[in-house]
Image (tube, rainbow, N blue to C red; front, side, top):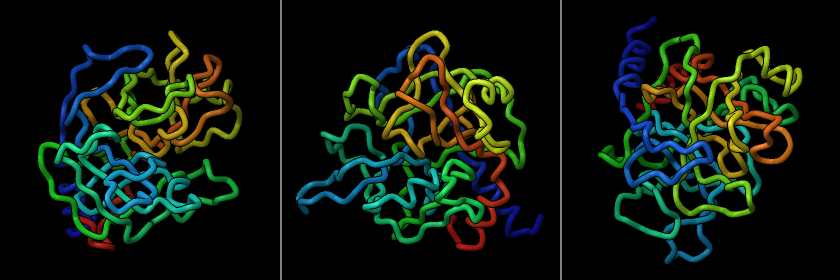
Length: 264
């Protein structure tokens, strides 16, 4: 590993946070302000200049002050998502913790194909200005290079639909269980690739939904292990699970992209 890439590795691994599992609910629950300082809302700019928040399209994860990790299909939506809002909790409120930036560059994984958008569904967005790091805006911890996934309890969070047609304004979280590759392929089909991981909640009709795409899936040590990518059928179908891009499989590409484009 070159010195430049080693430096990138150290910087990306610095942030390690913890969360309290006692607040988890099988059907999801509202988070609190500052609980997940690395979550980013990717938005269509507001129609009125006086409005701070635009229309939420996807979620993302801050991995450095100049790099936002999300799903590749979120980087190619029409109309494009141009605003990046960090430090956000509630779309209907402005607390003063929010920081808004504009997308400057997009780096989609070179093997991603829009005709097979679920494969290599990973992308890095560069803001026009670095985010100011503080208690409410802070990068997520990343897994080690090619680290094998082994955690059982996982946590997803975002502003996706609640499954009953309701669209929340506040950030929600949901505990899920890791689903083995073999069982995931059995219930989801052969489109589940080697660089994907699956998670679900067999105890209830809970799962990721529209609006959660691109958001984080973390392990109990708050390391980012997945990017919310896709599912089949209705949201929270008890016979289906959620599928994520497995971050550890893309660490070389992440480090190379961050290093080559000076996204520290």
